[in-house]
Length: 137
Image 1 (cartoon, helix red, strand yellow):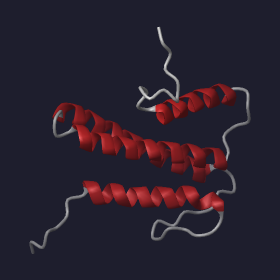
Image 2 (cartoon, helix red, strand yellow):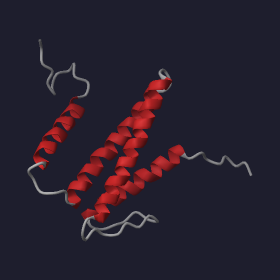
Image 3 (cartoon, one colour):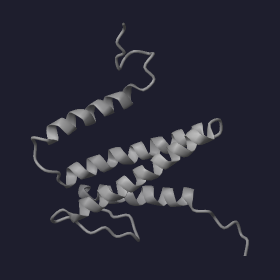
Image 4 (cartoon, rainbow, N blue to C red):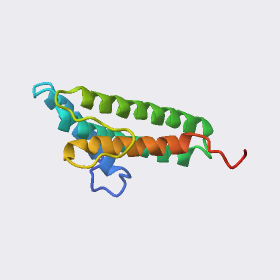
């Protein structure tokens, strides 16, 4: 039986498999490591945000031919959005976390990248899921 590697052309998802292996490794390391800090939550938020985008693209691609599967992927997409919101909230409950201002994307220190990412992706989610008014007044 042949084993698929990250360089095998038959493997269509080598980076996703590598990311999963990295998460698995990190999960084991956290048990004996320090508790989560803001940088850790920022990195995890970035990972979940990217998964959120991937599920959105998969749902859009699957939905025309397989509507039921597309609906399930859309539900997973929504749940991942909720996970990113909870990670963002956890980030701000840690000691000495800076404030996040929802009316603008914050500038400045690297520690605020989670807010920039979260506010930008939240805007994209609202734009996609909120019905627009097409000038019917």
